[in-house]
Amino acid sequence: MIKYYVYENGSLRETEQSEPGCWISVVQPTPQEVRELVETYGLDSGFVKSSLDEEESSRIEREDDQTLVIIDTPVSSVDDDQTKNFYTQPVGIIITDDYVFTISIKETQIITEAMQGTIRNLRPSFKTRFVLQLLLRIAALFLTHLKQIDKISSAAEQQLHDAMKNELLMQLLALEKSLVYFSTSLKANEATIEKIFRGRVIKLYDEDQDLLEDVLIEMKQAIEMSSIYTGILSSMMAVSYTHLTLPTT
Image: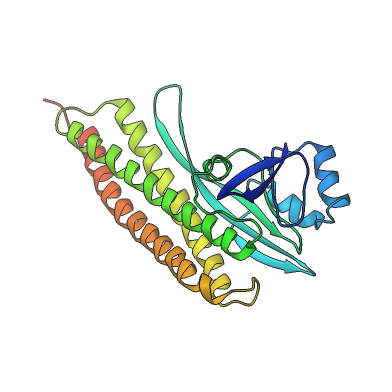
């Protein structure tokens, strides 16, 4: 699906067709829509393909007059057995002379929030600031999800004092796996943001410098939190396995 948004009267408004300075949101595109992106808008086919690859790692690349930023975003889900899982999904951002595109294989929270106006003063005509605002919100979402992981693991720790249940162990294993995903993605995101910080790929303006610094600070904070929670959870897992292997009397 392809949607078009322009900034008007203080907020984003969906329009029927594209116009210079608009944001073009692409989610789960059909093969015909992918061809339209390449043929009508002249997007680099490799950039589009990378944006739709769930295994693609965070990076930034420039080709002629187009810049690709792939950034990992946090996602959560609940299994049939009520085990909560956290993982990441890449979103591609392509900047051209006339437009800024976001391309993803699935709808993500960051795209939904942007569409709904949750991210204030999101102006696609200010392409650099638009990208930095998305990155800042993604960093905030990582922090929110990490706090959820901490809350779930803290509740699990309380239950460990009572009895070890299979579903509790499954949840702890899922959280441990989630933190591995988050840690890997956050470090890749950090490398991408630091490359933007150097200003060689995306043109940076003086008024965007503080915003970029905020993005980097938030991302580093998320990396630190992920590391702390990983250590805590590893200790809890060690206690859990000890509890399971203790002989019964």
